[in-house]
Length: 145
Image (cartoon, rainbow, N blue to C red; front, side, top):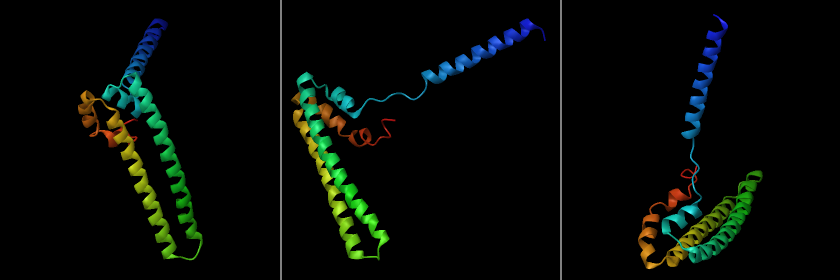
């Protein structure tokens, strides 16, 4: 094989590999919008609604983070019981308190979306109703990846 044929083969191989890389880049994982952006877009919020919504988000995040911290402490106490003699009553009590905290988390989330619903103008209510079918997927993490 002479030099020119070798160079042509190298050029063809480079072109093919560049084509494959370009195809992978263009068809790779798409960046999904944050739930906040999706809600703002789907509900067609105006600037004033966005400002109010951002206040709702901060309040919601604080409530959820506080609740999660409480649940984590309770879970630590629960699993700490593995180091001691089995006390079924104490374990059941801790599990019950953790369940109440999870109940509270669901109420916090529901209240948050109720606030969003009340923020919507009458013309936006139909968009909110459509959004309710997507809420669980929006925050599941799988949808956003």
